[in-house]
Image (cartoon, rainbow, N blue to C red; front, side, top):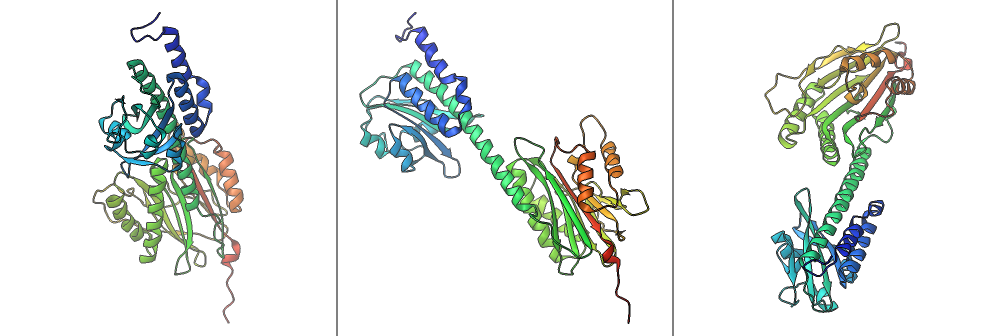
Length: 412
């Protein structure tokens, strides 16, 4: 059967199948764009095809892939929304056809130099947002039909899926790179302390805001932080980086963990609105055998002391950071940290499991922690709590007070 526009139904079906071919999904984004443009040139019998993607910060379209207009991509052609052919499509958010191209309608010199006579372009949408423009052209005058428009819109839909996949991939890579760069590549060597850590991402589509940090304070004592910014992906990783840096700065302002977290709370509430954060900040003094700790809505650490069963430390649990509500003064607890003891800090991904109370996971953790070398403690905890395939990000930090720290030089 031939429709009103002279296109046979089997030809229309061939066009649709060529664009929706499942094998296209196996290509990476750059190859998929090129393959789509090759196919649309063949199906529509056009000479040029190009994809321009939106730079949202510049409000410009950027030439990303092209066939017959490769110079456009090589030159990194950009056009502002509202200007030229592609810019007008982006502004109108609808298909536009130019049957007779003229310099007044086209600002891209490559199009004019190539001798394009007729153009058809459609917007590319993703989740309702305009993300680019797809256009095709001919070197001879052409009257594009409604079927041509529909096919090009179908190609644009396929291109939008590829763009989303690329954006998600870039976000995931950037988030993982950022998060890994902010985790200590090597834990510091501190006399009297032995440390080991683990970090396991729990989300295939991105990473979260879990982090741990260890640093030496001006007093010579050791600062230990573990925290969790709500959410996942690049945004959470970025917020985590800012929170981490701010807390480091506040530890130089005050020796009191509660005061440092109070300052951080104001920062998070004001500059990171909507990013609820839990954190624990401890100051360890191996010479004195003490830990000063302040907890902001975070799970309390486990302390295992030789000769006694492991237990959660006795510490106040103050509200999380960033709630924006007026809170009572945050508090610092003093905890004994004798020689041979092990402190285990963690994020909730280690102990939370779907379908059970978090208390069950905490009980398993307490049972798994023993006063042993820090690396051994981490390995035992990860194995006991089945943390190889978590459903949430996990940060784990074990700190052991070595026996040598308790040795004192005899008084003369």
